[in-house]
Length: 107
Image (cartoon, rainbow, N blue to C red; front, side):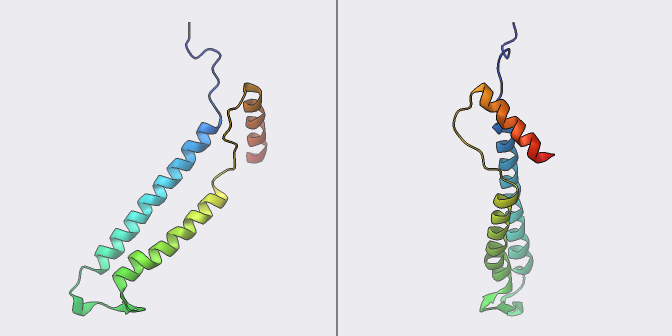
């Protein structure tokens, strides 16, 4: 007897996994941005630094501008890539109805 017989996986898991991947990718991109600007521009003698708004350029680009860029990307990602979905327990009928509504929007 198959143990998955009669089991219907919650259709929201697929979207949740996709959204989690987006979040991890955004976090890794933020880390790369910070590292490249922080160590790339900050690896010079202090006498060679250029300053933006009183901050060394490496700090301004890695921390100040990086925060602004990635906060903006987070808002964009939540607005465009994340989907509103109820978090209540679905009955099998509600799950099928939800799948139909998602398929209609993706088409």
